[in-house]
Image (cartoon, rainbow, N blue to C red; front, side, top):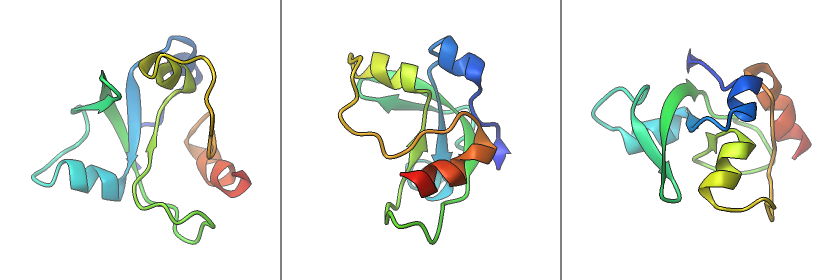
Length: 102
């Protein structure tokens, strides 16, 4: 892991932060460092605070994943109800289990 994963405080404070899987970070920022850079969720800017390795071997074959506090995603998409959620984790160590449970 590069950088850090978002915290419960990030969720509670609706912080505009994201953690990218490595492949997505490399695709978005092929010339360099993604940490600290800006990406958009819908039309809302967010800061990349972490990069994680992809979850190989999961049942979901998703090449590019970004993780963000659900409260930020709701704000960015102007919704309080999410139609589909593949998985959710409260911290970085919980990500593999959240993916396995989805």
